[in-house]
Structure formats: structure tokens, C-alpha cells
Length: 268
Ligand SMILES: NC(=O)c1ccc[n+]([C@@H]2O[C@H](COP(=O)([O-])OP(=O)(O)OC[C@H]3O[C@@H](n4cnc5c(N)ncnc54)[C@H](O)[C@@H]3O)[C@@H](O)[C@H]2O)c1
Image (cartoon, rainbow, N blue to C red; front, side, top):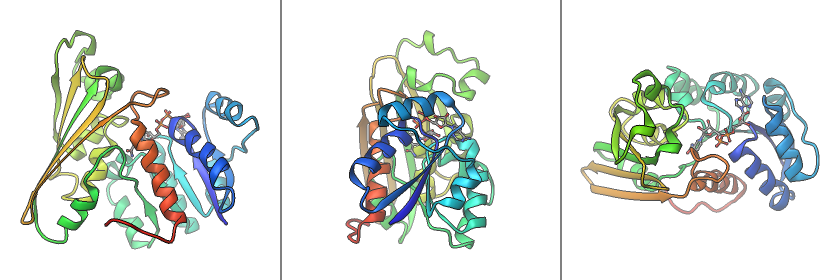
């Protein structure tokens, strides 16, 4: 039995908790959660028809073998320091949080902490990881999102970009993955994932398109290297609970958890 704690029980966290209790109770002992919003706790408890224990972050880390983070990028530095201190495993969803705090990713590697980063709502990480064994020339991500999925992004507010006035597809950001996660902390975790698997945060290029037409979060990736070219595209249905989060990202977290429990590993 592995003891699992979940930090953040919103869209992703509560989905995982429900599945863990229904399908993995033979191999996972759910310790509880660390959640700051009483409303999220209430809604989780009503979906489970029972109360979930809520701990401080450090208490949750101390009690668990594996902590699943599905909260917010701002919690990542503190969580990872605690994971290092108590020598635990961690699965991270708010991946942008590791890019924006310099040296954190290296610290995790140096301390030999097992950190799992699901692929999220993109395809092609398997091939990118293989390509990295040779030479990669360029990695470019173009993300097209419904305007509702970009509401509240600090970059748009700072630059007074009014989403309501957008009548056709508009490029609202173009730059490095590092800049993208700083400017869109809740919207572009895939840029962080892609850069950690490939060319790094400054060399991975990101373009964000706000679309008043589409209902899907579309991620198109182009990777060039000595191996040739990779082109992938995922057209993701947004979660009904949170339009910023794609259903595929939730399933990818579940698949990662399933992989941790499994003795079989298929794919790179
Ligand atoms: N890696 C990916 O591909 C990917 C995809 C989608 C979302 N995300 C990220 O995963 C995270 C969760 O996404 P979601 O759709 O479940 O969001 P959500 O808003 O539905 O849920 C987040 C929950 O975390 C709680 N929370 C926030 N700060 C907290 C803290 N410091 N401690 C404990 N709880 C806290 C909130 O109250 C909320 O209940 C977000 O950071 C999001 O950007 C990652």
C-alpha cells in the first residue's frame, strides 16, 4: 500500500480522489488533503458522501509517501522544499511553479527525489524525450484557447488586452516558455512540461492564440532535430468545472498515477 495525499481538491484533485477511492483502494491508502478553500472541501465531501481529512501542507507531506499537487503554482516551492526535507515522492500538476523558482528543479534532482510530471494535454513527449538523446534544434508550441480559458491571466490584464473585444483569432502572446508561464500561470503548464522534457525554458518557443470561435484547447507542437521533424496536435475538451483545465490533463494525471502503481511501462 502506498500512502497518498492530495494538495488542492478542485477539478483535478477531486477527480483523482474519487477514482482512487473507487478503483485503487487495494493499493492506495488515501491519507487526506491539504486544501485552503472550504468550498472545495465541501464540494469534495458531497461528491464522496463522506468527510475528507484536511491537513496543513507539512502534515500532509509527513503522513504521505506520495503527494499529488493539484493546487496552484504558488504552492510549488514550499511543497517541494517539504518533499525534500521529508524525503517523499511528488506528482506535480502546477508545473510552471518549478520553472519560475530558479534552481528548484536542480535541487529536486540533486536530492534524488522522485518527481512525476504528467504529460498534461499534449502529445509527443515520448518522442521528444527520445529526440533529446540526439540533437534537438527547435521546439515550438502554439496553443489556441477559447477566450473563457484565458480570463484573469496577469499578462492580459497588465497589457490591457480586452478578451471581450476579440472577434477573430488573435495572437496574445509570443515568447519563451519561461515568459509564458510567468505571464499565464494558470493557463500554460504544457509549456513548462515541454521545456523540461526538451530544450529548456528559454529556448522553447510559445505562441498563445485567443479564439472567440473554438470550444477546445488546441496544442500544436513542432519539434525539429537531427532525427527529423515531429508534428503533434491535440484538440482538448475543457473540463466542465474549470475551462482552463483540459479533460486530457486530468486523464494524464490519472494515467501517471496508474503507471506508478503498475509494474509494466510501455512507451519511452
Ligand atoms: N500540468 C498540466 O497539464 C495542467 C493542466 C491543467 C491544470 N494544471 C494546473 O493544476 C492545478 C490544479 O488545476 P485545477 O483545474 O484542479 O484547478 P482548480 O482551480 O479547479 O482547483 C485548485 C484547487 O486548489 C486549491 N488551492 C489553491 N491554492 C492552494 C494552496 N496553497 N494549498 C492548498 N490548496 C490550494 C484551490 O482552493 C482549489 O480548490 C492548477 O495550478 C492548474 O494550473 C496543470
